[in-house]
Image (cartoon, rainbow, N blue to C red):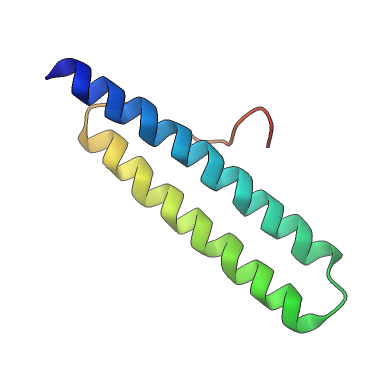
Length: 75
């Protein structure tokens, strides 16, 4: 059972890192967008990714894991 929990935390942590990295990518895309419509779309998606990473961090906490505060090294 403990192995299953650790595996779930590890998997969720990887998802959180990828989600935060994508949020940063959308934020950067919004900064570079010339079209206000695209800028708004990118900002909405960045915010959705941030909310998702918070939800995933909640799951990590509920499993007894340590929530993370930043993205991956690649981000």
